[in-house]
Length: 443
Image 1 (cartoon, helix red, strand yellow):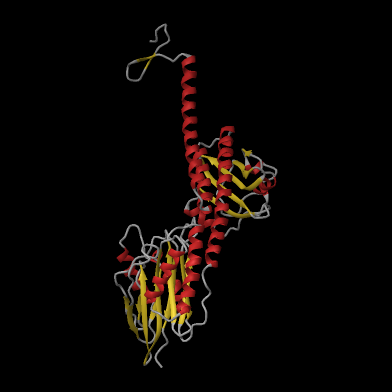
Image 2: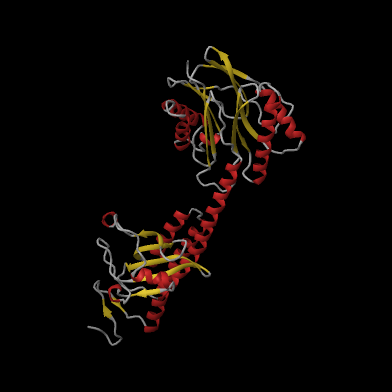
């Protein structure tokens, strides 16, 4: 029996007293404050994660995932506007399971009708408690999961609208509220800046790559030799690379091939690369001397002209040796060794202790190495970006490259270079260049 104080007996036999209404209110406010703090922490973490990313595809996916997490929504999507700003160029989703994705696999992008189209034309926050009852609703395509509620906000920077961010169905089955809207508006603002930065980065990256390629020559007619080359920027290039190559027929009829890598990734390195390549061409055409003499003169010239750069390089000279054979003479300045692949698929590195890179000691001694090349031999010169991996020794990358080249030596040289560049054993942190020459087949 309850006493006069209004206490009640719990199921365990103990006596519990009801909380004062004021304390109940404070307790509820503390719970709400805790939830709000947790949501704010999630929002800040999401905004930081989005702002740090420069890959546009990753940015878009993270925006949608963060929006779903912040609001507790089941589904999310980001519609990216095309260049004209009137239709969708991409539509990234979150929350769909595999079965739902399969059902929508053949569905085209939204065409700007219905509520999504309304948001494109009127990029202001929109909350809808019942999609089917909204006057702009036109329903869903076949196979689309059932959705009742909608929250949509514009992704924009000042007056530039990049798209709209959509959410549907809170997991607690309640309609989206003002707090959800405020959270999504904040995230969309950060997303707009991140998208703008990512697109700016892409433009700078593309211009940097274009600038880099201007320094690389178009291969001339090298008959009777075959030649091919390929340059690939790093997987996430942020600066201009220093890889370069050159190949041409000398006045005495020999073929000269050079590949190099200037240390640094900036405009100074690019300028030094251009100077080095130009000086090397002049020295090669000046007189028929061994590669070691050319590299020694190049080193001394750069020292005199105060061209301050550290460069690795491999310079090769191929000339007739009679009876369908050829003589390869090369000198290496701190660069990976040439790779020879015979027509029957035997691959071998011409590995000798490399001399110092250019820019270290202009008076240092340099060596020449010579090898006979049978008909149809492929000589592969490359930069370290093709084989270096920060988690594996360089010997592992060199071994994989040799196996890859041996397995595909029967391909035309252009295709062989593409295979080596596409399936390289490196970690992709650096740009890479490949130059391949093939001696004529036996007559």
